[in-house]
Image (cartoon, rainbow, N blue to C red; front, top):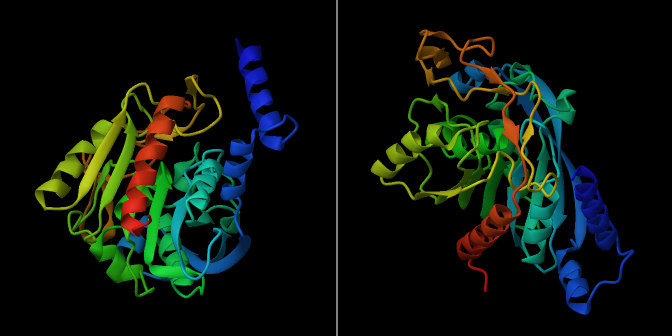
Length: 332
């Protein structure tokens, strides 16, 4: 079975590389996916502890981050989707999303939240980087894009995956915008994919008045969707425009083009699925069960969650997200 899967993947790569003939319609589709221009942008950020972020303490370590800006075909100021990766870095799921958005005339800005900090991944050591750093990186990228001559600052959407999905979820908090967003603009919408929702922050239902669409897999045991539902309910009760879409048989990272149809153990990866974390006074994150400051050494932190690709869920999510951003950006 493994040999057949690899053979199928190899065949797919050959087709994508052009070694096998493509039909005119396929060639046309591929042409629309090609960015008119690609720019690499360095921008300043900080490495902070979560407590520093929550308390507004900017005395962190200065770092230089990088983003890949793929400018879609078109003229003038274009809409943009900012993409924020998860604990494994920029993975195989990111490129298909950039191609999809570019084919729609939407530019993309993919943030690398690790290389500038000397990291490649934090799956097996989540304490290596405070989880809220990605939100600061996102705001700094927003500040850069808001000034770019090819960007419509009123049409920028934030999309994130796993740890980046958590950042996309909580980057909506009004309090965080006031503390850290110096761009002068707001996101047009938020699209978190399989985020971790284990933490309750002060003022968590006071979010930007922008639509939020969350996508999750039902059997996800890395960041269980069950942990998100109470927070989503609180947001709805506060009158926020938030919708959760769940997919059956979709593991964590279901939108990856690799390992489709397979369920794999993310060996030694840490998950806070068994934890409940609450922000206390002074920006301290408490383990609710122990009433002590949360640590990735706590008993509630577990190992070896599962990941895997799901073609049906991916296709459904592509359609749903495309329809949503088309509406948000008012595309024809």
